[in-house]
Image (cartoon, protein in one colour):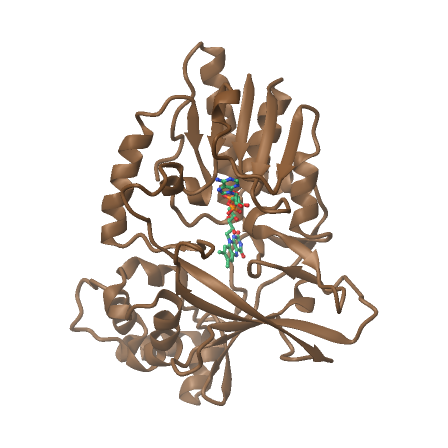
Length: 381
Ligand SMILES: Cc1cc2nc3c(=O)[nH]c(=O)nc-3n(C[C@H](O)[C@H](O)[C@H](O)COP(=O)(O)OP(=O)(O)OC[C@H]3O[C@@H](n4cnc5c(N)ncnc54)[C@H](O)[C@@H]3O)c2cc1C
């Protein structure tokens, strides 16, 4: 079969390779001038430091098969994400752990003492939290909520914690030990030569042609099937409206020597306009560039307009309704399969993206072998 794969991020690259290995002829198009999608990395022109252009990416997974998969295409270097937070003139350890609790309350509590203490701080009148704010007030109490979450959440999502679903706090666990590893996963790392190199290696395969700087629109008729990892609403020219995203913008600056002594510093105060600063030499300590310049990015979060890059799907109530309409229409389409963070309007970490792309390619192949049309969605949006 002749297949058009839209997008050269992890979704597109993994599907393209898997279908090419099954003997299909694949053309991958991406309107950007690089492969890698939002995971794209490239060396900074002044300092030589490998930079994560669309924001820091740390690979983390419990999935042995996915970990083995990425290791075929690039050497993964051990990397543990340890995030710091600035509140006022103090620096704290994140995610909230025993060190943070003892720092904030100027105590030397043991794990059991801290657990009992925090239970007392929580708002026991809240039975079933309806919002992120209530969830935080119930589990960590007003002080920690106001210091670490209130302003940061407002900046990140553009709405108050009281308007966000309670499920969001589950992403930031509170720990009653001194473990400050941001992720709990068994395998964690960053590719030695960067993500773009790794994804280029996935795409380096017989029967895969990559065309960069080209839009997908108007090409489908030359192919038997389209695998689409672009935005679902864009596929329908946004004719029922736009699914809402948050966008990010990055302000790059160079610093002679060391700027902040760590990879990521969150700025939790509401009056600071950016959410965090990342210093990229810390993502690749194995590189030893000649220059003593360090390259850093201030990260701002904002409403995503038509000309902005969509980053985080908001999935608020109105979006869910619109999403339902687009999904219903997509299900009427022939010869297209939607996947990935944009194609299914979902936040997906890289490991889940790869797992889903492999499953999508298997489902398409299996249907063809059985003489059936490929599924429109293998994973529900
Ligand atoms: C700021 C940020 C930080 C993140 N950090 C992490 C992390 O630390 N760890 C982790 O596991 N995950 C992280 N992620 C998630 C990670 O970025 C995604 O898992 C991954 O990018 C999804 O890959 P994808 O191929 O589905 O989408 P994308 O990478 O977005 O690729 C889609 C591609 O399709 C192209 N495209 C779209 N429409 C068209 C069209 N019509 N024509 C031509 N080309 C088109 C786009 O140009 C894009 O290159 C982070 C995400 C963000 C936003």
